[in-house]
Image 1 (cartoon, chains in turn red, blue):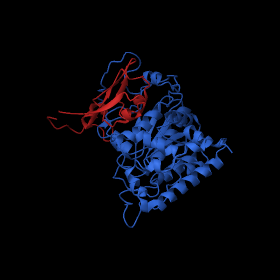
Image 2 (tube, chains in turn orange, green):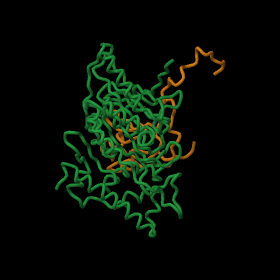
Image 3 (cartoon, each protein chain N blue to C red):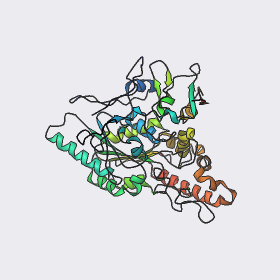
Image 4 (cartoon, each protein chain N blue to C red):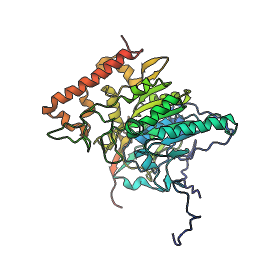
Length: 92
Length: 352
């Protein structure tokens, strides 16, 4: 913010005006879920149980949106065919 | 000054992955209850959008997500103070795709009652352009068992058409794991520490769902997100019923329960398998009815697991598995068995 805003320009107190999708919670992650598409049966259990809504079904396959995935590993644990592996994040 | 910055992710079929729930006035649409997950993934979007700052492995957003798949149309969500409230509404961000309000810790149910009364008044004078607007409350165990109980009891007594969903993580996790009325006996918390003097909390969990049954409201149920189909059915029933409804959903907390993040759902499954948290529903007409896994266990008692199965994966009960604390473990097992036997006696669909 370059200049101070006047009281008319300040948003109403207690009213949220931005969506939390601006906050990329993916940088919390220590383990990265990687989906093995050849093993995946598209049962959608990972999509159902993802607490961060970061597993996306595009109509044909399931993929992970790493912008928001916190790396909890619920998907890998719940996957009935063990198609998801948790790989340590390295670098960056 | 609304800033809409939803990331656009291309999908081949169905709705965009993240979207806000917008209903045009006069729209006559009721969402069906879908259990085919691929169909559900194409048609429905959860009420929570990503970017909320709940811990990795928290089950509360899963409760909200599953519940929102069962919403039937325009819905207003009320939250009591708690983990879910503070981490989804950090100013100026909001993670809710539906209209959402938070007032204070103790009055979530009272706020919901007011909203419901306003909806009724607007409908009477023809100013409401929707067929039905549902009010759903999400409150934690602190905001239900202890602080918010008088508001909840008043709401039930006045008979407002509100669905109250309690996500029970069994302590005040938001402020750093203090004991609440929902903490089970012998659990470690920072205010009921485990040592040579005390073996954790000294009192049993308050039977909140049974207390709500005693109010004789139209619908009371217990659920866990691990049994997702059951949870969705119960939420839909609670919304459709005319009058107050209460759902007690167990929700694991990896920080407070001291377990690995990945087993959040597994642990809830174990809670039901050991009969620590039986799944049932209650209506004034039918009485207690066991559902889902608990009904299976009632029909085939050999599936019932010892309570150790539930305790062994949690750090808060670690002391109970030491050989010198065998007596305490037996006490807990006897209590769980007594509650389960009592429920079997009351449930009308349990085998005799």
